[in-house]
Length: 296
Image 1 (tube, rainbow, N blue to C red):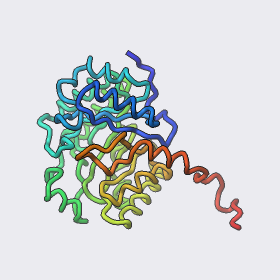
Image 2: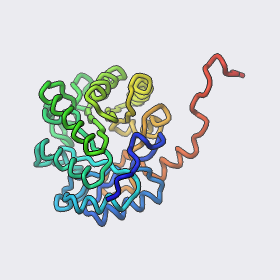
Image 3: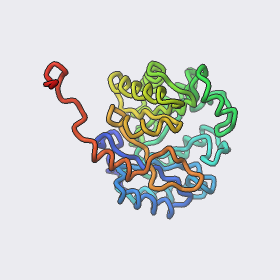
Image 4: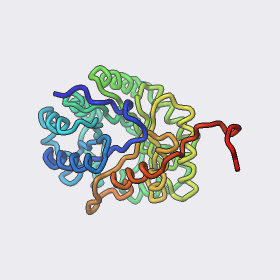
């Protein structure tokens, strides 16, 4: 098995990370190859398959996963959320999810996604429901997928150490289901950083252009204050533009996909489009202090 793949934190930033939703190893391999030709720098593999989006359970063996990871020289991150993209909750425990993620690392994954409330699921409506929509539209709600329970935190820290001992990195994430202002985003990000995460991923909710601008402001704040790489992004159609822009302000990557399928996630940009933007937008990183600039 190849073990010398580049880690996610070693890739030149910003970069693209193409999401792989296919249900079988053969289909996922094909999609990874197509994504590589479109310019994908890395992959995130969804393991919680329901027969439509994500690798089916029968392919979650170490042999199957190893065959998939060996099909590319690009680093792959494994994720296993509590819900299917079709809208149903998964019928596995957090402990079972983490065992599957460790299995993926043993098979060759270079990073795993550790949900921020693992071992202490936060209360709230099921995703993709009308109640969940109302939750996201209201302004005074606590962020989802974040816990401060001492026992859960200790178990998360131990899980991060286990993944590190296996030679992989940990992205700690929260799909907060609410809009985060910059100070809220920083507070959650610092919490995850303190637990030992190599990468912090925050998914806010943007309901307006004003929200989107706050998400970009949060990106700048995290870039200034965090010691680890991070990903700042949002759900909602107003947040799509920020997915393209945030990488220029410090967010380490843009999650992409190779194609739009019926019933898919259309807020995630296409790999080819993101690479066009990355290639076209040059000379935007400041190299001098304002006092040194000729303003004329």
